[in-house]
Image (cartoon, rainbow, N blue to C red; front, top):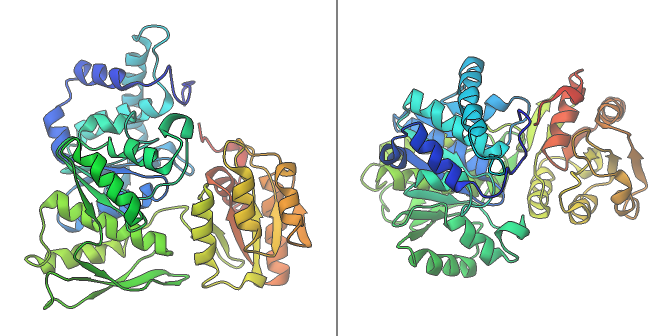
Length: 436
C-alpha cells in the first residue's frame, strides 16, 4: 500500500493523535457517532450487521472494515456506496504528506494509513454513525482513538500472541481496551460464560459495563441452508411481543451470533428498549436479513457452483465446514485448499482434512504456504488428493472436475486464496489483485 510497511515503526497511537491535531478532527463528535467492533473472527460481518440495523433506524451510516477482497475501496463504505476513487486518492495524498513530515524512524504502517484516510473521508461526508472494525486487537489499534462508547466483542481465539498475549483471557483484555472508559461492551454468545466473567471484572476497572448479547433475549435454534441461516428472536422482557423469525443471507451459527451481537450493540448505541419500541426494533431485525458480506461462505458462481470463505483460523474453519456440510453432501464437495504461511498451517489443514474427501491443494501467489507443509495431512485421510502449482491451475482443475462429476467446489484457507481462485475462475489473472 504505497510502499508502506504493514505495521510501520512500532505502535502508532501518538501518530494518530498528531494527525487529529494537524487536521482539526472533532474528537467529541467522532466519539459520539462511533461504534467499535473487535474480536478474532466475525468482526466484518458484525460491523455490516450493525450498519444495516442503524440504517433501518433511519440513520446514514459509515463503515470501515478490513481486509478487502479485490479493491481497497471496499473498506470504506457509506450505506451501499464505496468511497470514490477520486476521494480515495485525494485523502491518500493528504495522509502520505503527513507521513512524510514524520521523523525518520517513526513512520506509519499501512493500516494506520487506511484508518487516517477513513477519518478524513468520514469527516467530509458527516455520517450520523460510524462503525469501526479493529485491525489487530484493541489496546494498540488505531480505532481505540475514536473513543467509542459502545463496542461489540465477537469472538476470542489465540492470534497474534506476540502482541496481544499468550492466553485467550489476555487477548480479550487487549480487545476490551478499544472501548472508551465508561462505555458498554456487548459480548457475543460465542464468548463463554467463564471468560465473560473475567472480561466483566477487567472492564469494570475502567468503569466499562458488559452486556451479553442474549441477556433478556430468546434465540431459537439455527437452521442453515444454501440461502443462509434462520432462527427466531424474542424478548423475555416483553412476553406479549411474539418472537420474530430472522432469515440471514449469511449461513452458520457463528453468523447468527454475529447478527444478534450487532443488533444488541445498535440497540445500546441508540438507547432503544425493544419492549417500548417493538416496531422500530423489528425493522432493524428485518434489516439483518438483507445484509451481505463478501467472502463469508459465499456462493460466487453457479453451474458448477463455487463457494468461497476467507476464514483463516482453526476455529473459523471448523465453524464454516460444519455449516457447509449441513446443506451440501460431503461426497459431492471438491475442496480447493491453501493457507498463508503466517497462519497456523498444520492446525488449519487438520480441520479441513478431517471434514472432506476430495481435495485440490495449492499455493496462493500472495503469501501462500508451500503445499509440502500440509500435503501429508490430507494424504493420511484421503486417496483423492491432487496438487496444483498455483491458484490459476487450481481453478481450472476444479472447474473441469466439477463439471465432469457434478460436484460443488469449496475454497478454504484464507482471503488471498479465495480471492485468487475466484478471479481465476472468472477468467482473470489472480496475480493482478492488489492486496497490498
